[in-house]
Length: 163
Ligand SMILES: O=P(O)(O)OC[C@H]1O[C@H](OP(=O)(O)OP(=O)(O)O)[C@H](O)[C@@H]1O
Ligand code: HPA
Ligand SMILES: [Mg+2]
Image 1 (cartoon, rainbow, N blue to C red):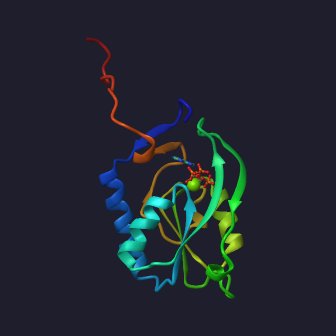
Image 2: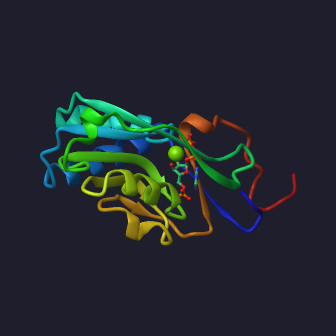
């Protein structure tokens, strides 16, 4: 995260509520036969959505691009999608779940693999938003979202410095 970016910390509680809200919205879009989860960020929302919608076939597509410095590097597909989940219709009745879309590069790559799938994220930034079919909360492009699995409780200095 650079100094000009705003921080948007998300607690476990808030994330669960937002992922459940996503499941409610997706309930009207299905039915879906399988979930394809974009690891690793998509693992937690995929578990929540699959539980709510009664989907028991869960596949992963393993993609990495952002390092610990939160800078985007080249997209790397570490594992593709199994043929039996992809199906003949290139992802018809398949729900793809990720935690967020930022530039849209990851979503574009997965859409190329599964053009007929429904793509859902919990959060979306404006640049990547056109790549997503369903999302819950939009944040500005200059916001960095901090997920609960990446953070912990820490002292916060007061807004007004002093003692
Ligand atoms: O829209 P984009 O600019 O492509 O960014 C969004 C992607 O970046 C993050 O994944 P990351 O590559 O950091 O890997 P991770 O899920 O393992 O944290 C996030 O989970 C999305 O998958
Ligand atoms: O805002 C973000 N937060 C966490 N991971 C991310 N990967 C891309 N953008 C983000
Ligand atoms: Mg990811």
